[in-house]
Image 1 (tube, rainbow, N blue to C red):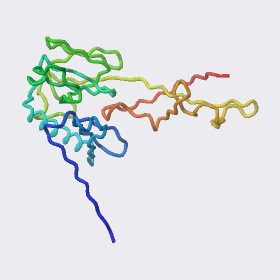
Image 2: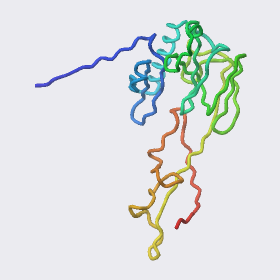
Image 3: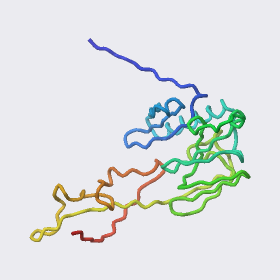
Image 4: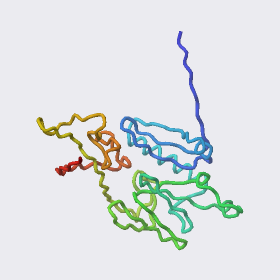
Length: 231
């Protein structure tokens, strides 16, 4: 006897507040947030067979969310800009209803659409000037274009889009124990540091479990040979 149970999840396009790509080695997935699911910290997570298919779904759903709210073209001068902890750039348009409310609308109630690019920090002002700084300390200025990245076709402008490059250094340390007879060994004691760790030695870090900020990043490994003794 076999029992199949199907669970259906649904969300209205007008309720979606943000679409966020999720980095995963085995799946190409993204998360759909609504105000209620943000409170629960339980977004709807969808997976695609390929990265290209995931990007197509993201672009299609983003355009649908924007169309349902009457949002088209580049961000306005009054738009709010924000970045995630991974550096993805999002923008939110203030609505007349929000401006008329006596109290400011919380961020989890606002709709955020992603724009191409990657920054460590972003700043904007009321006259429409938007600039930011990348992880390699390069300054970037918004040209007025929108879309870019995986937002192509109707979801992207045809000009004022340029290639952005960035770099970020992540350091992991190999720790070995020195024995007077056999020399250095990668077998430590339970009280020793992890064989691969961060600079403090308290957190295990390996090339396998260190993840880039987003799928648009690629690793470039370099191996400096420095020996540091700790007593």
